[in-house]
Image 1 (tube, rainbow, N blue to C red):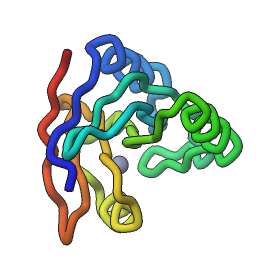
Image 2: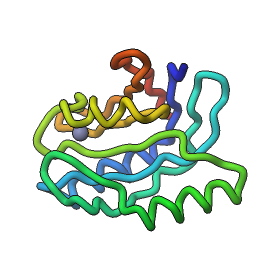
Image 3: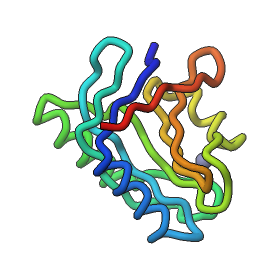
Length: 133
Ligand SMILES: [Zn+2]
């Protein structure tokens, strides 16, 4: 069970600028790093094209997603989380997010109009402590 995510200030800034740059559409990407017990240590936030390009959902472009996964694997890293943005709503998972999260074991980081928060689905929606460093 993941209860904390640690992420560099630099990567949070990447996500914030992606939010701005893709308005009014949602932006998305993967969080690459390593798992240390219940902590996800993010080394890099990597933007990925939102192939859905809508204002209230996202889909990681499958080719870019695969390349990111492959690259992480080669370097002994893994995809520890996925981020996406809510350009016009708060950093709370939407109904669509909640349904999609149930198939994922990793952290969901959401950047909304009121800041950045992280969650995981573990028999229900659980908040994940976000530590910036
Ligand atoms: Zn969402």
